[in-house]
Length: 71
View 1 (tube, rainbow, N blue to C red):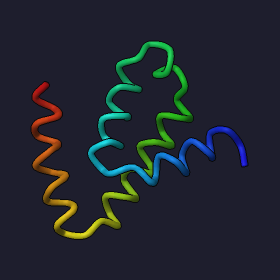
View 2 (view 1 turned 90 degrees about the vertical axis):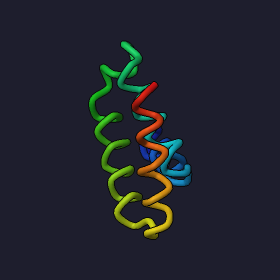
View 3 (view 1 turned 60 degrees about the horizontal axis):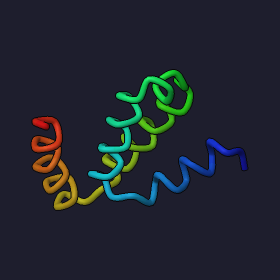
View 4 (view 1 turned 120 degrees about the horizontal axis):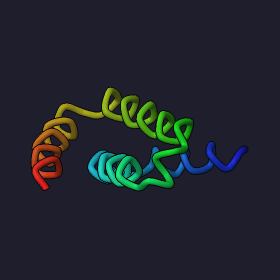
């Protein structure tokens, strides 16, 4: 398993809010943002996790996302 695959597997285990925060901080970091393959992988895994989450998890995530984007 490649380094990126290992990172994405670990990323998949994070709560949705932590995934969102990691994606945001990766985009904001000038060095990490250059790695488009990694960033696209994070976004793909995150979208899969959101899609597979329960209605309760989605609701909590959407409420938290509003607060995270207001920062």
